[in-house]
Image 1 (cartoon, rainbow, N blue to C red):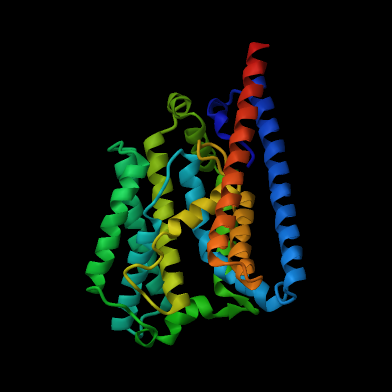
Image 2 (cartoon, rainbow, N blue to C red):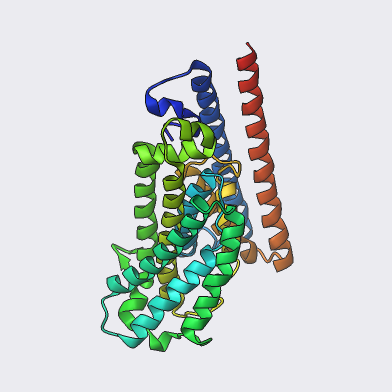
Length: 349
């Protein structure tokens, strides 16, 4: 991240010394936090390997990467939403609606090209995201309220669309199931899609004016507005992107598991938010890096895979994951408090 959200004034060409110093401190702390998270992942992997030698086999590592791909794709969109001080609790329902629509489409038209099925799912997701963005950006409904309400709307539409029935594997053509199960040069399609999305997202947030404006809106909405940034358009954009990625994830999910159900991905939004928080994305807005959410997603994927392999009780699995997430939130809060205190002292000087 080349610029943080406090650079809203800097978008007009102005640079202020204390803010530049604050950014450098923030970047240094963020880098240290990511290195610490990476070190924790490595230590955890070594510890699990000592308990179960099959953990670090190529087959298991591939399974972890494949199972984490959809989570990591959604984490990109959620990061953008959280950076703008928002939240999206409807992504699980959007995923289910998009996946169900795509599954019903290919079940009725088996000869349909897989890319058209993907386009159907992404299109449904984009429409859902646009609606949410409109409610948040221009109707001024609080994000948590708007997304909570639309979560039930989208989930209800999923059951209505399917008539309460499932779409099972034998109703889906092999070409559709191959979207997620196929591979290129021995690398699963899900992993390749996730990598591509991360590359595009990194360029978007780091090297485009719109990407920098997203951070500006999250850091200080009032200053962003004064500097000429149309905050409404930025908010609408991030929820639309989140919806599109949810639609893509819906198609990939249904293709991977060869099953579309009304309650697909119920509660999955909490895992996505957890991946972002673990990766250092601040709920207060304005802070978040692509590299951070990659590490956060990988950590969750490792925990989901490793804890059962070392025979940890399902109840303790939830406890351990919750504790790690809570620690990450506390670290983020302490870091933000330290940065704010440092900035306040510099202003007094």
